Amino acid sequence: MQLRLRRAVGCGRRAWRATMPRMSALAEATHDHLLLHFARNGGYEADDGAGAGSPLPVLVRGEGCHVWDEHGNRHLDALSALFCSQLGYSFGEEFAQAAVAQMTTLPFATNWGVAHPPAIALAERLADLAPGDLNHVFLTCGGSESVETAWKLARQYHLANGEPQRTKAVARDIAYHGVTLGALAFTGVSRMTEPFGRPAIDVVRVRDTNPFRREEAGDERAHAARLLRELEDAIIAADPATVAMIIAEPVQNAGGCIVPPAGYWAGLREIADRYGILLVADEVICAFGRIGEWFAVTRYGAIPDMITTAKGITSAYAPMGAVLVGDRVAAPLYEAATTLLHGITYGGHPVACAIALKSLELFEREGVLDNVRAREGQIRDGLRAIQDAVPLVGDVRGAGFFWALELVRDDADGRFDADGREALVRGFLPRRLYEAGLVARPDDRGEPVLHLAPPLVSSDAELAEMFEKTHAVLADASERFFVS
Image (cartoon, helix red, strand yellow):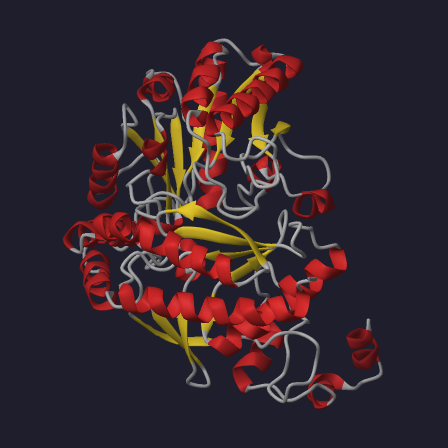
């Protein structure tokens, strides 16, 4: 409103800028023109320290596991650029060569009734890496598109089987599955869904698998049994004949790297089979090495009907996603008179496919999965040492290179109220992380957590830096926010 009034009286952009605190040219251009995703676009602090927000990081270069901002400050990327940069930032030349080779051969073709060699090769490679009979691949441009695709494939499968009434899905509390209206319907974070009205899909909600503060903590079998019983009860209450699919992440991101208890995924598979429901593993984050496997669900003892992916499929050197589809679900799509009623213009872009193939090649050449498996315990132990030393850290959880520290208010693992979460998660931590040169993610979809997910090529040196900087930041936060 203030901006509108200034312009209404003829102030103009130049005079309006004169009223603003001093910002760098890049930060100012961001403020004027670039809408940042999931950000408070008016809340960033200026260069002179004015304003109540945190500094706006404008990143200009990356190398190894580090990025540099416009001021020359080096930051350890302990979030892999939002769980995407599996290989870090040192393989640009090889990826560029793959991209140039494709651009100078066939720069673009759709997958709308035609095919091209990079898409064919990538689909074949993914089918080879996938568990079970997930032999069919639909290529997308990102995670939300992959989740939307899985839903539409599920609907076409049930329609082909004469069950048009299967219009419901089961998803977990707090879980995040995407931003487009179909994918958003599966998301269990009310502040992200409520502003956009009635969900596009009827979704049955069940509990997430976090044992922290729950009576089953320490007894995985009992925890899994209770969760599965509650899930089956919810399906029965909704009428099993109306449920099309269950969607869940192997390790749930929102809420803080929530690992499933032993037996949980096998139980999901059994319940889905019993009631004719499709099981979808949302691996937009977990696939491609983040948990130390090509596909994380294999670690937890089940083969789903579909796997949704994105992020790490290209190690973030190009935007891409994919849905891996089992033989049973794909079978109706191969009937002569059947049309797959879904398509994405840029899905399976030839250059993105070439980059994805190069990424998979580098994974094997660089021993990425072995590195994650070998260092998982090192990360767990390092973060638990921080928990032992910093009272603000109430819980450490995760797997592979995908971890979160849950932050508590007091010795009784007390929860922060809304004002406390605001001050900690959106006030103190972003600024302090920036000052420390650490890219991590404070979040409060659920309770306050700090996400850490370093590039999968991280060595002892990068992990030691991550531990040191995380300890320093959270120790400072503990002094300010923890109530003894």
